[in-house]
Amino acid sequence: MQGFGKRAPAKPRFDLAADLQHWTNKLADPEQEAARSPAGARRARALLGAARAKWHLEDRLGCVRFAILSLADKDLNTPALAVSAMTQAAFALMELGAIEQARPLAQHALMLTRVETLLDQLPIALSCAAAVDSVSGEFDRAEGFHLEALARARQAADLDPLQMALCNLLSSTIAILRHAALKGDASLAATVEHRSRPHLLHARHLKDDPRLSPWRRLILQQNLGEFLGLCGVPPEGEALLAECLAQATALADPQMAQAVATVLAEQLAARGQHQDALALLGTHVRADMPHRGGFRRRLEATRTAEACLRHLGRADEAARMAQRIARDLREWETLRAEAIRLLPA
Image (cartoon, rainbow, N blue to C red; front, side):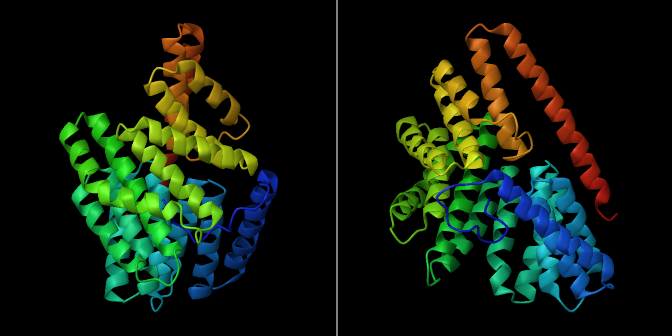
């Protein structure tokens, strides 16, 4: 999901160390501001700034902590702060797998945007509510929120809101398809694929619009490629993802390359190209970036690698990969429990 503001257009080169330092610096200032400010809107905004920095540093537990502190310390006359705090906390909780704890925050944020007519924040509130429902397999509700967001995005003067709305819709649809596959729900998968066709046509058209920035085109194309692969259209999906990977590699953006390579490797493995999938993961999934890229995406990479090793008869390596999966799942569970404890009773 594209949740927290706009990322700058893609630069010729990506510097991971500089990106981490940027958000580390962005974290220091609001932490100091929060420490010296009395309760109220100023302190709440500083805490929100810290939560946003924690998100970009991929510290989801820290993001929840600061967002909840901001929500508890908010000025009652500034509901916009409450919406920002609730959506940030909800997105971070979802990343940690705490879906039921994210749901009331997302629903309250959406209700508040409607009651207070916070039109600028309505897209993010709709996206947040849809994300929660999609991870739970609630397709009808998620689709309704996305259709409202798309209708509003079409009224905007530029293409950025439309790209964001389509990416969020595709991300939700991907989550629902994965949920359906996990549950063995072929009927849900078929319904999702059928009702997503108009949006696929729209995404195909938008990605080729020259007015779209390179970074936004890359994100849209990645979502489209992943969706097509899950829908059983691997040739087009793989072609789109391969192009995305080439672009991310040319930009020297290891985080983007890692995400795209993970999805592409999963699709190759599904077609029996286990050696090619392993080669992709070995090249682009960085061992020195263990906490970059989101837990679910990293878990997909490890599970794909384990399955490929098993199919290739490399039992010892597959067993070690299975141990890593179990270790990562235990860490995820620990972080999730800690995040839930941060929430008010």
